Image 1 (cartoon, rainbow, N blue to C red):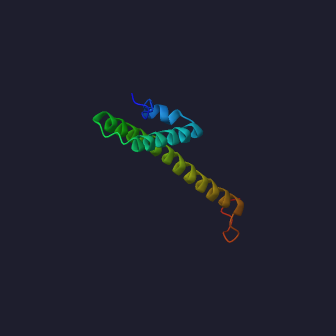
Image 2: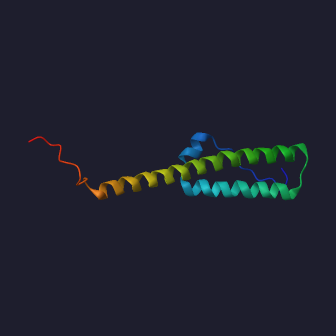
Image 3: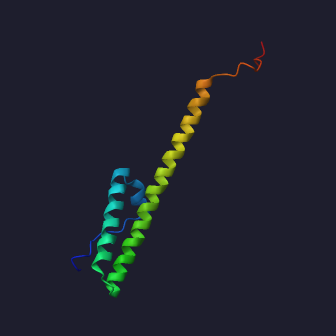
Length: 101
């Protein structure tokens, strides 16, 4: 293993899903930095190309999981905001009361 190669164990989907947001963002940054170091090393050997491919694949999985979480969080916030606006308005006054009594 050369000095420019960083050993990052690939994570499975289950492991990424169980990881907290801060750790996931830190892992994303770590993998991105390793990719940049691999580019700067200009190691075009088959081993270097294989390592770069592995890092890029790992980054795709990590980035996708982070993106899914960000989108899910954004959509949840929009949903709760719309629900709270509905509840704040209260019942409509222009509709007659449909209760029988």
